[in-house]
Image 1 (cartoon, rainbow, N blue to C red):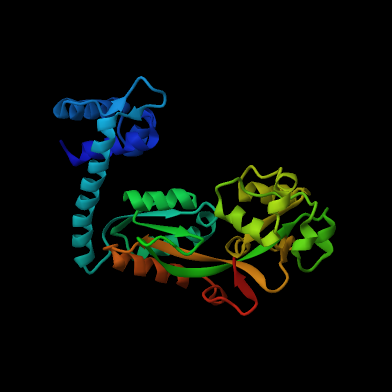
Image 2: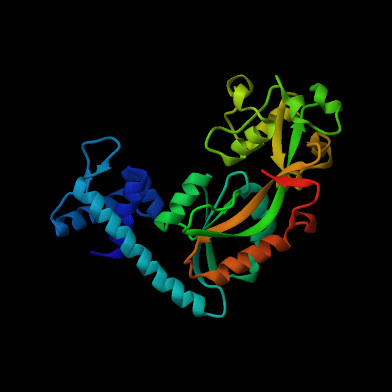
Length: 308
């Protein structure tokens, strides 16, 4: 048995589909299937029930998968220890990023980061908060950019920035005449909100106190933040954007931006990682270069802001 075979069975367990698991592992489906079959033959047990769709681990397979995850994590830690001892950042570092952070923060720091640290291979994946934490727990990523302070005992995190919320208001809305938004202004408005599972949506529901009117006010919740912004620009309703997104807007687009009344709701961006993370040098460098790419006003909570 090999570490590569363990990677294959864990990928199959994650995706429950041979083609998607093979794509994730950058191999052909026949290669992945053959390697898994060889491992099953060597162990003398079936790890997956292929009669189910999607496929599921067998009872013994679930136990083997758990042990394979432990073995792979231990193997990666050996590599991490070696890389951490080097004076330059090298090797592979896997970073999960929220979809509401990735398009706005990554372009600000990643090009310069890649130039400064060419020997470090940064693998980035977009995951929602719950998925990112699970990936950290499973050892599938090394760190995650999330928008809440880690509450789990096994997680730690460094603050990257404070990201204020803004309204993005269509010119056809009467609220476009207002210089600031109040939560009471949003009653019975057409609001474009992200789908359930996004912490950005949950934070906005708390800000706007919309829990009691969720079904009537969030009928237009499917889509992405960028899609909603285009809808607003075309004359449809109101959506919400973080300051990270506002920094990228054109002067014409900024005319649609409205701040909330003081104190302004703000999210705190963390780089979360396991408390026993070995690659602290990479963590510290990532945080430093992310912060260097941002306006100084975003690095500290302002007196006019509060964290949601």
